[in-house]
Picture 1 (cartoon, rainbow, N blue to C red):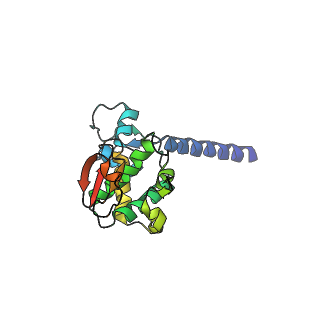
Picture 2: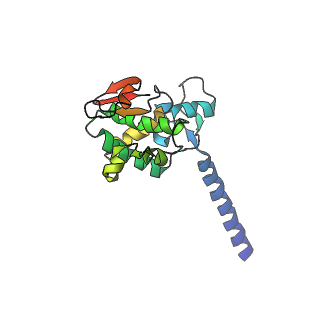
Picture 3: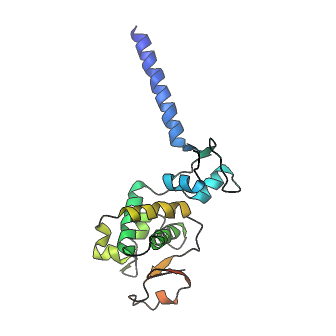
Length: 195
């Protein structure tokens, strides 16, 4: 009897391990009305990575279709930090400006010119100066709004599709002549985004 109980427990453990391994592989079944954009935002992965991972040539997907999710390279901790930075840097800016601020950080992570993680980019010190003033003045420690958190999810889904902005600044308050010499990509609200 003990053998049967142990065998049954072993079988249940194997079944639990198998189903958790399947979940860890990151498989998503498309629901009715769902888009790659929705899946990307919900899973903190870029639409481009979703397409690449699944060999998709277009954004067309169908209910019931199985989509493999790429591995996330941004942790929950990094997402929370990025949302705090977005809140501190883009408080009072339009939603698109919040997404663009998060996108700048992700573009830096993807660039060979900057550190390779969100945390390293946010806390980077170059020539004795913090890359982002909220790190220096402590505003990075404030809680982010739901809108800032949502902007981070959107930036993660949008990752790799923008115009490659690596910098942003407010021309009315910036005292750096170097930053104003960068190539402007777009302006959203009070921020100029550049590379």
